[in-house]
Structures are given as structure tokens and as C-alpha cells.
Image 1 (cartoon, rainbow, N blue to C red):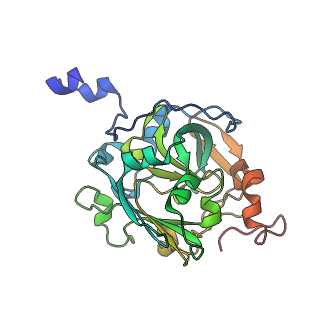
Image 2: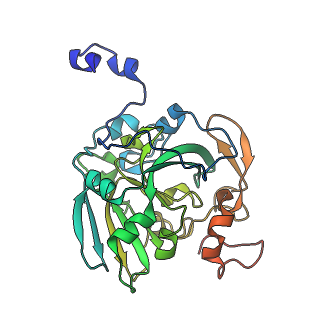
Length: 292
């Protein structure tokens, strides 16, 4: 703080290469939930916070500097759709209302065939579903991020269908693994990792885990997600990790772990036991489909 206020040249480098602004949320470090463990070492914080996809700020992985410009405090979140009491609430107040903050160790698998293992802090998405109390006709949860092209240069590119949209079925949203993260490595999320609140669905490819969420809408119609609109033959709505089904431009049976090494990719990213029941009417044999 002293270096920043005195304006010493190079202070940003001394403070830390990947430092960024984050919304003040209490509760860090969160207590770790021992039910969620890993079969590999944690990715270094440096790698996980400097190698990120966030197309709102550009197609490079190195966008953490650009993402600093996003103001995440205040951050008004809208919860609407097929619910009894639509609400607009600041993200910090929403976190307090939902409660149950904990830390979970999750694997993260990108559709680009790289992966990492990180300690997310947050709460179960099912907490938000319960808070919203959706009506029986609500079959899907649609999520939408911000649209600020003056701040996010990628949003000035008209060929992308901004703002970023993703969606889950209600049953997926209620699954124990679906998680809303507000922290990482024992502190509040940095902007490049999706501050102040993002989705984490570890059994799906990373593009499903929408960042910097501004709106949750409960709907009877299946949302069309950002990448599905842009390239439906390459990015399906379900996007479950599947080593047996290659992406049209590269194989998916192996992954490059950030920090070094190649490992085999597991069905549902290793979370088959927890989520396979959600898709029992869609998977019939070992030649299971993904893009549908």
C-alpha cells in the first residue's frame, strides 16, 4: 500500500505480478471442505491467475492487466425470471444472505486441452436456487455477465454475441458440485478470474463456468450459450468433459497441466460418480456423445 500511494516506479512488480482489484468480501480464508480432494498437486497461484481465458478483455491468456479496469464494487446482481420475488442485490450482500462459504479443491479442464487444480472459495449454487425459489415451470438457469465495451476491449468486437451467456438445467444447478466462487487461494477473486462472482462446474469444460455474473434468470426455455451461438458445431450446450469425443480441431483424450506434464483426461473430468445420473438418458455406451 505504501509503494502504491507514494508512486514508486515499478511498485506493481514489487507488490506482485498478478495482483488485481477485488471486491471486499468477508470470510477469507474460508474453511476447507474435506469432501473435495484432488488426485494431483495444486496449480501455483501465479499460473492460475496469469493464464486465463476472458474474451471480454482479449483472446490472449495474458489479460490480467486489462481486467484491472473492471470495477467490481459495487456490483449489482439481478435474480429474475420464473420466481416469486425478483431482486436486485449487491454481490457482497448476496454472499452474506446465501451463507455457507467454504473452500473446495477442484480440477478445472479447458476445452483447449489444458487443465489446472485450484482452491475455490464460495458456496453451493443450490443455495442461490433455494434463495430464488423458482416456480415449477423453471427448467433452466440462464446466467449473463456484464457489458461494458468502454472497459472491456473484447466487447467492441461486433462478431461476438455479447454479453456472455451461459446456462444449466435446474437439476445441474442443484447438483452438489455446482459452485459459485467468490474467492481463490484464500482471498477474494481477482478480476481476471471472474470477480466478484463466477460459476464453477468442474465436470464441464471451462467455458461453461461463466465469469463476473450480473444476472441469474430462471426460465422454461433452454438458453443458447455464448460459444454455442458463435460456433454450434464446436461448442455444445452440455459441454461435459469427454475424452472419447474429440473437439473438431483437436483431440480431448489428454490434457496439459499448467506447471508441466500431460495426463489422461477422465470422463466428466473425474466427477462421474457425482454427475452421471444427470445424463443417464443421454449416455448409452462407451462411445458417448458430447456435442448435442
